[in-house]
Image (cartoon, rainbow, N blue to C red; front, side, top):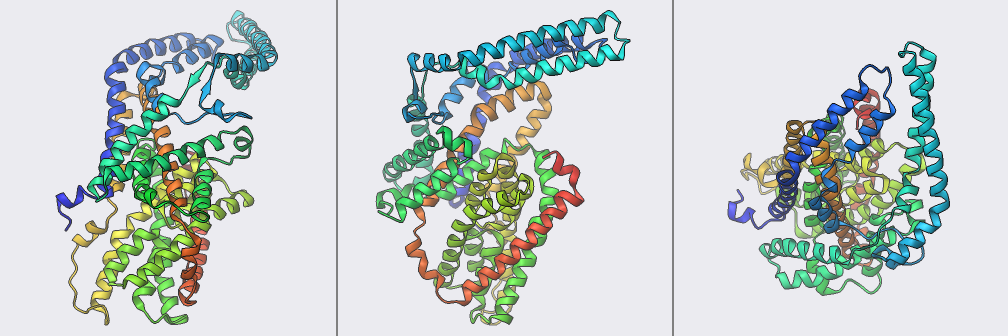
Length: 566
């Protein structure tokens, strides 16, 4: 059993500590400072909405205007909310001059304003005309005491036309009302904060803070570069985001000039990912986890054991791999979640170091390929984000690669993929325990080895508790605050102004680390040996087919109502 002192030196503990500290700091700062005043303002706005809605068969112009004012009452617009945004802000959008992603002068803002002035004036004229028409049509309906259904329908249509133009003009209005900014101070502050927190965590795990910070400078700079390239207007239009840039930049460096040795202490892929997933927990309310989890359990907990057992049987009976321990390690690596499952399974069955290295090498190669190719296949086939995310979450090995592949498709796919992968990760401890029991009782496993239920807890990826805990906590807070205050403080305050931005940074740093850690020349030798490669390919092919079929059945045939609400 892992002692308390030993646990405090693990990545899981520090991911829980860092993610929890940052989330709690944000919610406490916002709620203690602005919670009471926001609650009072929202109550007043709610009363206005009810007053404007009384006696009318449709939402009036005044009701929508009151709703717009109500939506502006959010914690993200407060002083602390703006501070949190500044701290976690990424480089902005740009066309020809990349420096505009970091700094916008008065002259540049004026140039942008002039470039959209004609469109803005046209939009404002049109919006004002439609607003007046909606008011007039609404008055006609009121003059008939709302007894004339034709006048009511005309008023509804006029108001809808006004709202449509108002929504379409948001981009033009935002450009016209641009303000000067500089992001250098925010980037420097974020670097210092993350360097201190992850430096402290790395020190407890055997690294020196100095070596981590030295390498982290390089990793953070590549993260900034990734966001900058993703912000270029052409890249934004084609959807080539920060995740792709972060991985490709890292791969280019590691496979050409090579990753500098002084950088490697900062390549903490799982540390960044685990912390990011703890933070992600605040964004996925527990009701949504349960919604995704119900069909997700079938995707992860039914398919995974079938693939594991089938692949192990195939390796023993069909291609006849000489080593049972290599067979089960590769099978678990491929079917559950890559390196973590391989390490846990290898320990449980007492596989050799060489066998573990081979399994991990195969996993890294196919993970690198699948996290790029599978999203492309999904887009080519035109699969919806929920189905694509479920397919990714159930098949790609590493958690970091799952998040990266999901990010290629969109936020919905990312959330579904990450949630299903976490549901699948829970099986690490169970499978390691089962493998330990099986090999302890079989010949050639050191026969007679004793295992206990504590093995499950030892193997269990404990950072998942942080994800679930954050989700439960923020779900309860949302419920206690009520929908309006919860939206203002949690949705618009903690999540939109802080956690989603911070999570993006943590994932970006992880993607950079993945790229810098992957050298195809070093991994090429793992393709030799024939049978392990055949085992992995055949097992993953079965995994892909069964996971896609189960995801479609569960999300679209058995639980379509759940899928509609994701």
